Amino acid sequence: WSNHLVNTDASRRTLKRLYAALAVVGYVATNWLVLLVSIDTGNWLLWTKPAETTAGMFANRISAAFAIDLLVTVLVACILFHVEGKRLGMRRIWSYWLLTFTVGLAGTLPLFLLHRERRLEQLESTRRAA
Image (cartoon, rainbow, N blue to C red; front, side, top):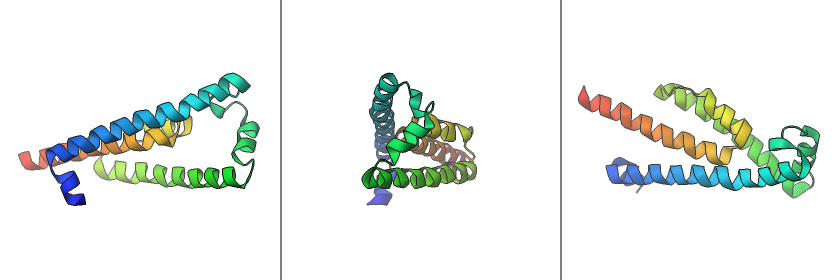
């Protein structure tokens, strides 16, 4: 099933559309809440008052579990961005790190996967032409 999902042109287009939609949803959904907190507290993008941000992230065991899960996932994603980006010869890999640390992973990961799919298509097209 997974081979069929990524090996046809129509399936690849569908996957790219899905990644694009998830990037938009990931950025809008999370950053809408960040914007509201920024307006309410003056803690712009959750960066200007790091102690307040950290206190909120670890306010109880449930939020701490989610925070730790996210922090580990961010680390893994940054490793993926670097390793996979270098392997495929993707440019501006640093921009995925910057986006992750400024506006979040929820939009950046699907954005990276979208660009990865495009790069894979370029490489396959180049191989077929050669």
